[in-house]
Image (tube, rainbow, N blue to C red; front, side, top):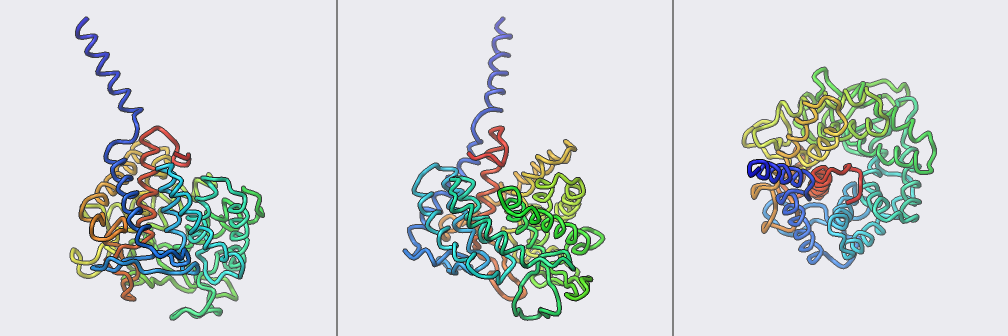
Length: 404
């Protein structure tokens, strides 16, 4: 009887552990994010039109941008995630303040393809957490604006609808891998009162990207250049990676995240299979700590700069992908890899801690252009806290799409 009693206690403990709140390390890392965000808010200007973007290596002060910058949505997104985790209204108020600063984005024609990054990470999270009808209206208008960059002849949304160095616009139609993330806004709008054709545009963009944006080994180009008149592919190039034949780390992470999201929205098995292919080549080539160098083929490895932002994006995507694949061994592997990436990002090597008031160090923005190299960058912080929240939900037996 004594042995039976001990066995019952052990089984009860195991069951309790399986249903317990997120492990201590996860909660500690989310608490760390809240603490860093607290320090950041205290240091920021009162003017919400000045939005944090990055902190240069060796510096402690944020570089600010306005609502037109492609990264403007990530800081309010971090604030919304802080609110979701903490339930503290002070974060809601801060998130609302910075989200409102982005409303003018829908009052003019798009000058960029990044409306999804700008409004869905910010106002989209705001709507998810509050159901504010004003947010819904802004998002629907933004989706309509983004859809006007779509070319039926090419089958993708135009990137950079303006003069950009090295881009022969308007003779050429350019589409970058980052655009996969902007499709989520269109999918959301199509099922939330917007035009149903927004769904078709998003699917066609994903299909065209799947066909033209990848090499035979499933590594991606940063940009594909199309002929505007004929819609035919001219070439694949890489502006922010090492070369036109290299695997730029963040570009591949956008592909992993993007095609995973497209499968979630369409349930089309082609996209799930493709998401796994672009994931597997990324995982196969990672260094031991699972944080990639800025480009997998960069010269100078192992002394080349890392890109924590790519790791954060990928970790968040893998947690979702692990819930979608039907192969249990693959699901387990994707979940484990995501957790290991987050473990690496949560060490004193990658967390900013007392270095500055961002969340992470060692991200690389545009290495060939000399921009934001080995820096703290706001989109790394956004996807890091998103991944931690997703892991917390999974650890508690919840769906990653649920509110905490």
